[in-house]
Image 1 (cartoon, rainbow over the protein chains, first blue to last red):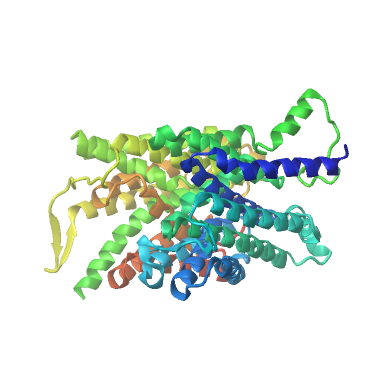
Image 2: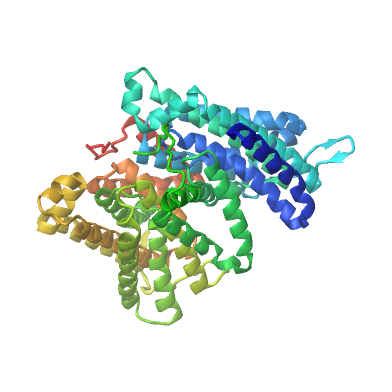
Length: 324
Length: 289
């Protein structure tokens, strides 16, 4: 069996499992599954931003921009989800494009802090201006659509809707990463000076990655607000940003599936420590620290570590960009 | 007129606090190259210690301040040894570790103080100093201002007049060259984070009677510290102190006339503008690549 057939078989099995999954779950777990699906899109879109080596702290707020776009369009213009979803993506991308001008004049530490400040400013604007953003209480009554007989208020239909949107977005993100653009982003990260010397405009590619990532996280935000029906500024605060960071880092950010793995594994882990509600953040913090100290390349590095240790599968990816 | 003078005084006192924790953040970043996201939580731990010892158990305020400073310094030293030193080649890893620490400290504070409303510490100094009939300054605030000035001048004296202070500044300029001169980098890192953490603890202890104490108070502290650090110029201690006082005055006046949220938004926008126009800040000269 060659590797392509393997991929197709594996992919179809996974898809079948994803489709069958909600029917075996209790209501509460169906809820969780939908949030997980949306969060997978959030972390995967974050990955494309980090490909250029810049870690932004504004991604959660960008998700909120998408969510607020969807909520405002729904409430004030009464348009359906088929309009709000793409519009959320486009508007978030537009906000990101505007932010590129100040933010990408900086790099590294300055970018990190600058993006944090810009995000916090946007969030405070939502809090400050009660019209139209609803202040601290946010907006409510944002409902998912009904199509004929199918009521997307129900968990299972909404799950299928979210799953198909997320899978489509992941597919596009995967294509982008493996296209010429994706390779250039890698080049900007690892050999910025060299890339510039052969005519790559690093500013433009950093901005492009940021805009693409924001587009998809905007869609994720819209999916979230349509399911929840409400949106508040605090959903997209530092807390959620930190969760995105944790998922990406614990999963491993060197491979496409790393962040997804991190989101899935940590959500399951989170569910298993539900009983310890009070100390849950501390357990998370400890897991984060331990994984940075002992597994800096994330969960996705475990198989290759195991292979190296046991001596099988010595071949290495000749194009691996991550070996410094 | 009365309002302006009163705000001026309040801004100055606020500036003392801002300077105390911003200087620590700058020191840690300068020497170790790591952004300590848990710095606000160090301030929070300082405030909680005073609440626990002074307000709950009735011990002396000065004793509580001392315990707060020592405790927070120990937490800082622990972070250096077990989080920042193993990850010193990767600044991002250090930042992430400090975020992990932030969560842990918040939970510890919640466990110690319990959920529920913010805690208050009754001011240990009573009375107000009335100046020119209309200007009223509580003794508590005067005490805080004096202590912060004292701590900052001690730090300045240490950094500019002692050999260890020179070594510390040398490391923040060039790590490798200092190591070649025989400076023990790990020891200097310990000292830097020790000073930074103790100042954060002191700031928390001094703020305790003047503010609401809750496990999430560190969030506003770290935002303020970032604004002050960027505006003052990363790596510039005098810039941070100057920016702390300027920003405190700015924030106080905008709060008086337009409200607190607007003041913070203005501060954040100001910081982004400084990043664009003059990324080295008002006093910074060097940008590390």
